Amino acid sequence: MSGNTAGTAIQVRGLTRRYGSTTALDDVTVAFEKDVIHGLLGRNGAGKTTLMSIMTAQAWPSEGEVKVFGQTPHENEQVLPKICFVREDQKYPDDALAKHAFKAAADAFANWNWDFANRLIADFRVPEKTKIKKMSRGQKSAVAVIIGLASRAEVTFFDEPYMGLDAVARQLFYDRLLEDYSEHPRTFVLSSHLIDEIAHLIENVVVIDGGRILLDEPVEQLRDRAVTLVGRADAMAELITGREVLHHETMGRIARTTVLGALTEAEQQLVRELDLELQPVSLQQLIVRLTTKRNHNDAVYATDMEVQS
Amino acid sequence: MDEGRPLFVQIAEEIESSVLDGSLQEGERAPSTNELAAFHRINPATAAKGINLLVDRGILIKRRGLGMFVAERAAERLRAERRQRFADHYLTPMLAEARHIGLQVETVIELLRERAQQSTDHE
Image 1: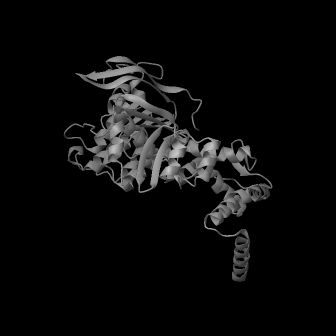
Image 2: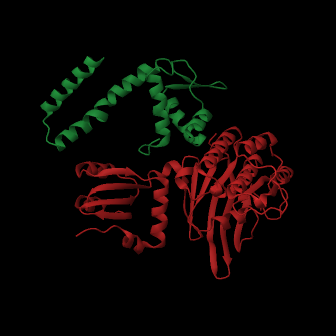
Image 3: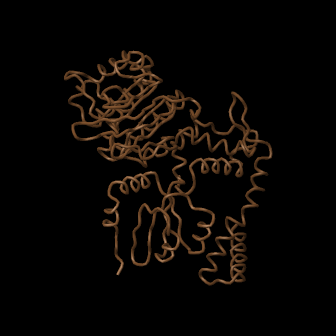
């Protein structure tokens, strides 16, 4: 089920992509395990879409290579039908109705399932007679999401197409994704800004920042990556000496500090003696802390609530 | 689900509670990985990890092709496990708080008796 022994679906090695003087991807090496739901997370402009576009052969790398099931996907008729890439700015012909888009997808993907598609069309209440071009953002997103799910492609990329969906429709998407994944395990790569919403959905998380891979780990292991402590500032100072601090803020004599790495037995003992409170760090907090730290290490402290007198 | 403990541990604890309160009987089929994943809206791998915790401890038994079943005497064994952890989980933090606010141990024992009396009166 977990696909831990299923092998690699996508292998990226030394991938660099430059646009003029901008480096969108900088020597990226990362592997996406087969039959696992991966989260590809990062800030706007971090390189998520560029990486997805190259992995799905919609863009070329400046340097480096991508292998999907061991083969280069670019101009490769054996691999391309196995890849479905759903993006927010998906383009459709001017006159296309939803059914035309679904028919095209059914022709393109060997595993397309009409029963599943029809159920999703009803679930998401996709209008039959409205041209896709004239649809609301949410309806367009629904069309894209249905194509991504019903194609049952061996590798499916979702580049935030669900951003146009409201909270109810997003939950529907997450539920249908999990149900279908349980019955038909395959590889998913989801990018999203709504990290906490997908935190329980994904098994592995890849964080990209400034065109580089910042983190590539099973979600469960991330729990040990960082911990937040709350308590008296002087007691805190004693504990965090020599540790890498991701975030630090104070209010009067109270401090809240997020440190990298799990606490040792001795440190846990010290936490109890100093009467500090331990708080878990959510996936969203961890990623915010990690990406903020890397980008503007000094600015972090400037934005802190320094209320100390 | 709360963020305090790993999700798969919470899944295991929830099944434990069902076994302890009898809503999941010995010999009965336990929820499958996919059922747990759909119900809690979590990745099936996480649900599987929670189930495996219980399989490793002999609380659930895997029957090939049929699913997971509650082992014989599972409730009794869980109760024994929890009794062993009771002092660590409940008494240690209670005494720490008592010390913190200057309550004598004798007073705590007194309070405990009073409360126990009250709750038996209510039953």
